[in-house]
Length: 137
Image (cartoon, rainbow, N blue to C red; front, side, top):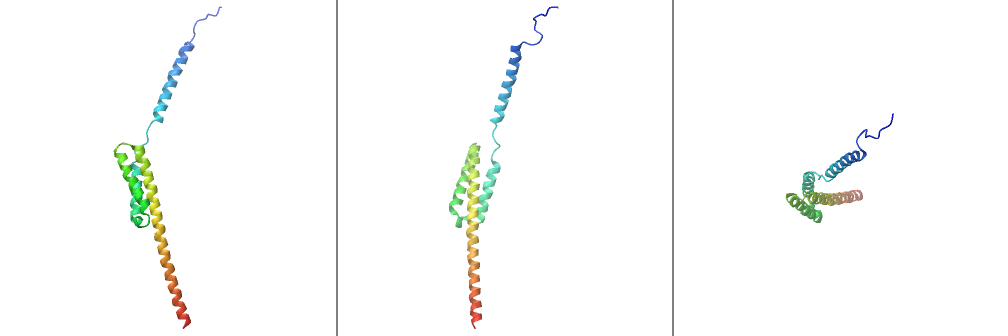
């Protein structure tokens, strides 16, 4: 029995060609998946609008006008970018607007609480003076 040198299966070069084709398909599929964009930043825009509203309600115009002005400007830029289809810019501006609005809210609350604290301290000082006057009689 002599062994023949015939091909028992597919040739080695066609086997690599099939693997190469599958590899190319996998790479192209991964590339399309990696290039997929994020969903529109509607959530970020909504959060920025709510943050600006919250700062407005906390009288940030009075206590943190610079931060609130920046937040309003960034929110307007985010809305413009969104309407022009520049979603990445819209997301970036919306996040910046929310951060500045939160800063304005925090500064406003701090100023408001400091004013309230000063008022309470003044009331305590008045009460102590009264007590001292009544105790001295």
